[in-house]
Length: 287
Ligand code: ADP
Ligand code: MG
Image (cartoon, rainbow, N blue to C red; front, side):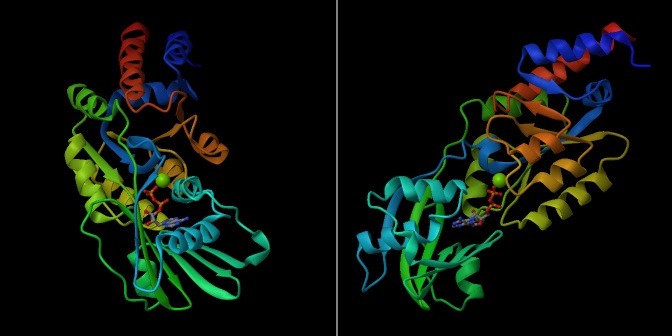
């Protein structure tokens, strides 16, 4: 039977907006030494905005943004949302065909009978398109039409206001290692990792790479527990695999909330501190 104190602990956690799906997870929170965090939507807001539009020769800014908006119009990725926000015109969806979302790369869509690519440099490489490398740090969406490079759109995300304090707090609660995982580019990852003071990061990961990285970290954790926090966009399998899978409740998909052991209803990484504190307090009451 579950000691009564755990119910008290679960109730206390819920007052902080932390949903714990059982006493065993509350207990496990006491033994966490490794915290793995997804970047986009977990440490950052996950709401991008367009900061620069850089067309290649033969294209105007307007044309480039229009192509991007058409290509992204069927995607609900945060990148797509920002591009559609920036585009003032209307998308004529009768012009769209053969929509393909390529995980960790971007999109391939037929627009007015021409094949359009919208995604990162890996997509361009894969499709044999020569692209420009921006000097600015940011998430880059390259666009190509019928094999011709059309330019790139630079978009930026912001770190959550409590993210740095959350990492500092985790360290002071005895967490030995905080690792950030992301599908985003190396430069963006490095700048966020440095700003927030995480111990380590891995960038340019495909969804299956995130699982592989987690497996490695699980091997090294010994008897201690490993906790993963994500928003569930492309990371639901990682959530399920961690000792304690934590989902962001507001941003997270239903599938993520379902797969998670703990849900942070306020989407704030600092809520993890509350969860661990409640777990510590509950342990004192129960034992
Ligand atoms: P994260 O791990 O940061 O949540 P994702 O796995 O969702 O990132 O995406 C990884 C990368 O794939 C993005 O940074 C982007 O370069 C590219 N990408 C994914 N979806 C799209 C899209 N709809 N449009 C353009 N690029 C995309
Ligand atoms: Mg994500």
